[in-house]
Length: 248
Length: 158
Image 1 (cartoon, chains in turn yellow, cyan):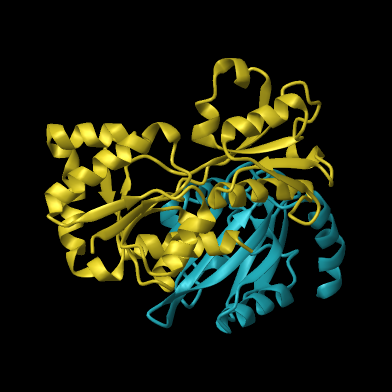
Image 2: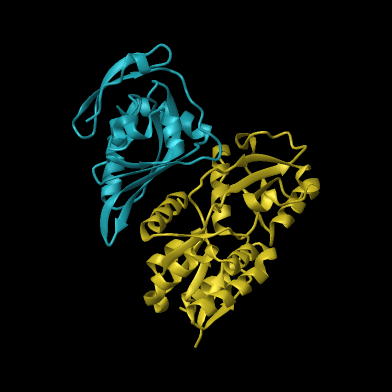
């Protein structure tokens, strides 16, 4: 039975083919049979993890604790220079200039991305806002969050910073950023499961060296990355502890 | 061991008091009434060893505390202790994390220049292979309402 690889469902849609190209590269380099399964949402991906179907995952930082502590995964690599940051935005003509001036009861448009939602909700706390006194509007994508704001169907949007930055200038000109996180240590990671544990060092070396040849560089480019960098166990434990403090 | 604060480091008019720290040490601190607002979107992160000695700080910690990284590493975390913070809060913090639980609270921290800043702090034990090897503290921007509540409450806890 091939090993099962999956990617956090919050990957940018433009990179879907990149993950299939990466999987082909990975199979060739490692000699392992690997099947890439892309889940449409976090609940279906978590169900697969729960049933021990997954051997390799590009994981959302929110899921890292569960993968390490309950499922015996360990970190391999993360993309260089890519961290998860969140943005709180409102409609450009909204008079509010500071999160502290937002009121309980507001409608907050979010996606299901668990780490971005968590960071965003933390940035709303200075306004005495939390899950108990805001109305969450769950959207399938960041562009839909922008649409909710522009139509006036949501008061505040929580965006992945990268996704916000990639919105068209026409849309961005109609929005206003209240806060942009500068956390710098929260990131997705490629992680390996217990059935492949004895291959960890082989995988890690291949991935870290990936940007040293032209073919590897091309594959990385299709994912939107420059290179992979090794994540050691303690760096992962640090991020898990940090996420744990935020999830309180 | 913490050095006393020095008048030449202080910005503005200051008061002076000697604190009895949690580990039994004493420190003369100089403090002003100048607040530094918590920066939007940032987290202040530090780790300590099991005795509360700082082993890691991030850039936001350095900027907000006013100390250099070299001054902070190997210093007790009580380098930030402000005289307006009731000792009971820190006893509760230590009792909680030593039980292996998370602690959360609102803290007024002292800067090297004598000023202060309020944070919402969460401290968790770092458990590695079943053993507590230190603590991670993450501070975020507090709500002003909660800070105002603490300003009223904390003087009653001495």
